Length: 74
Image (cartoon, rainbow, N blue to C red; front, side):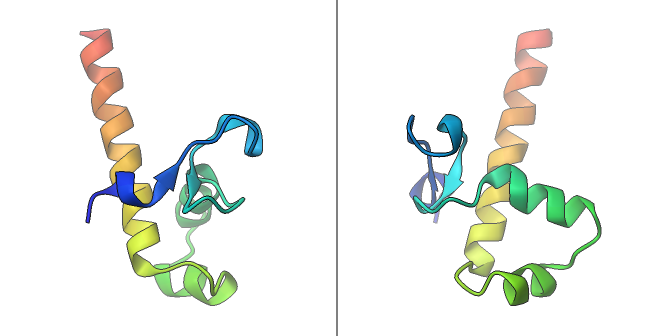
């Protein structure tokens, strides 16, 4: 499954930030929790409506964004 199947961007939701499956939790929220030291299991426990695939989609989305920034800067 590709992250585009799970990450949605809607202009009227969370200021147009990328969200998970149309919900109000953003990719940034999940990445921030992981960066703060939460494990995947802890994120899933705190947010039972998320799945492991959602977390991987957030990581893939972030990796693609970083790759795109590197191309622009080059």
